[in-house]
Length: 498
Image (cartoon, rainbow, N blue to C red; front, side, top):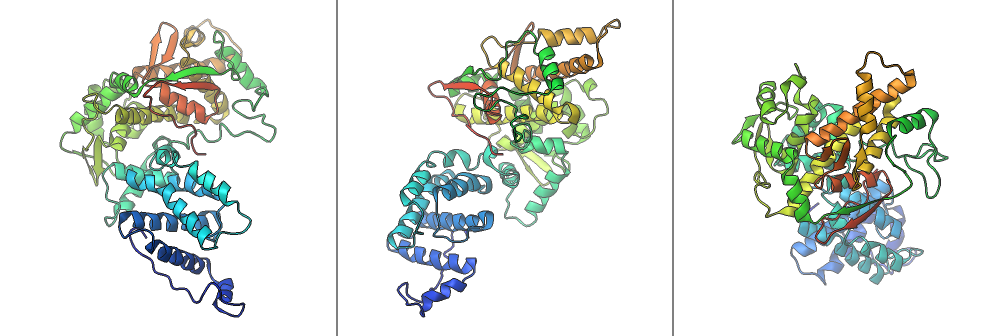
């Protein structure tokens, strides 16, 4: 489809009478109708745009948009375009399904669709009843959004993210058997890791409101958050000492790219990623599911500063979150490249060696931080009966950590001390809440070990390098945040796909 001209031949004139060729269109299949209209568009374009890449990009974009429109939305008429259809196809479906394209093509998507709307209007094909001006406005409104979404894993569906992962790893998807290898490797990974590898899926279900909004994570508009008795008790006990209100916005500033990148370069996470790149060197063997071999895991754990005593007789590498994060950071960013059963240093192996490319460093760092946060949410879902309150506690402490005063861990630390006492007594419900609170405390400590959170005494704050990624994740949950951007800051993702 890309780069090829697809010639179509019409059966008659548009002015044919009721018994002429135009009446035959009633019996067209969707494919025939699309071929007829796009054939006319190609001939119309021949008179206006010279042969070359620009013309081929226009044809490819329009043909793809019309195919998505039919296949994904069951809307086969290529002349039927409303503001809603533009938003759905260009703003949502394109980012989810288009992978492996360069920035020049991405920038040409919206202009190509503008040309197509001109064609429909000029040739009388625009469907009566659709507001042409409103549709143009909807398209123009996506001009700055589409380049931010296409190729961004946070806006891709699982299939798109998996293919993007393969491209990032240097796999030639056109090679025979390449996709079979990618799919096989992906399916062999543990479910918890697949959720982390495909961000956006791990939080589903926790932000869905019930019919009466009683199960919403946060209140709707000015309504109060309504919690069941057990959840309310858990929050009251665990958040004691923290002034956290799910309805009162927390003000957060996102620093300039240079500041954020400098903070990331000082994190343990980035240090581990650089160690991993140096350790791989020219080449290392990997397993069928894209992990390191057990003997290599044992060799690498102490190099990364991860005590192997914490993972006695551990299962494959995917079970060790502390290794998963730097491994995925390097293999998805281009610092390392996997092909077949080998991993090698990639084109961005030395990306963190200097401050020359702060924006790229920020993008890599945010993806890594998202993965760490998603893994925590994946852990929170393991015990279904505790999932809701566990997620709420993670969100509450994460929100509080974004404040200048940070989040107060004194209550969680007291839980830890009391649970270690042989003479401590509590009700069953209180005991369960305290155990869960200590779990959350250990999760926050893990973020501190990665350098994503700073902890002094009983106060924890999201580090400068972690705060922007954390804000993105919290915004996806519609957490009450008032975000300001410093001059030169890398824009945040304002929404994440459901």
